[in-house]
Length: 155
Image (cartoon, rainbow, N blue to C red; front, side, top):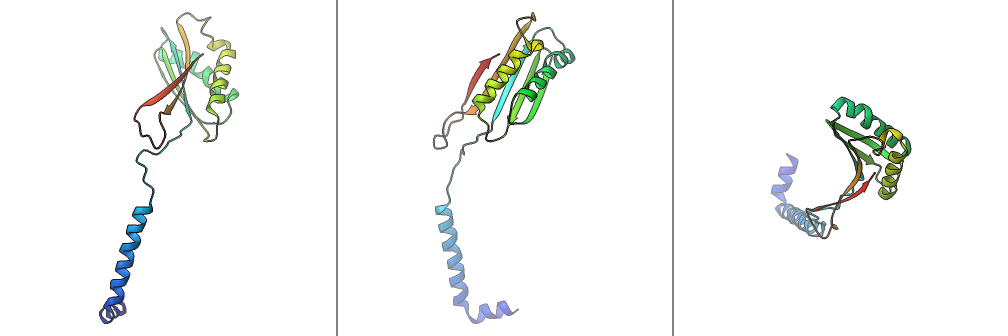
């Protein structure tokens, strides 16, 4: 009740406080940077394997498992690996730490897959080999675009 009595006794004080709050709110809104499309840098590389004629369990045993082994043992800076295997197709997403050089990571992935004999597409009929894709946002933060750029390196 003390606050109510003070407000009734000195109303001009609360007018000044309300005006100050409104003024600081307007200043904060004007000074606050606005960015509708912020630059998002998620270091992700996708590896896609195509092997016609293999069922889902065979694709997982013959391609996905060995690909993940070779990636996890030869590539540095990996945070997480996700894999989805379908009949004749394996899609793996490799998430990296934020400070990783993705060009070096792609080179390491391609090198790891080329050295592994089970993943060699030349010796396996029906294997189309793998494709390493780096999907990144096209454009800078000051030029908002909704398109995406893909860089692909064949294995």
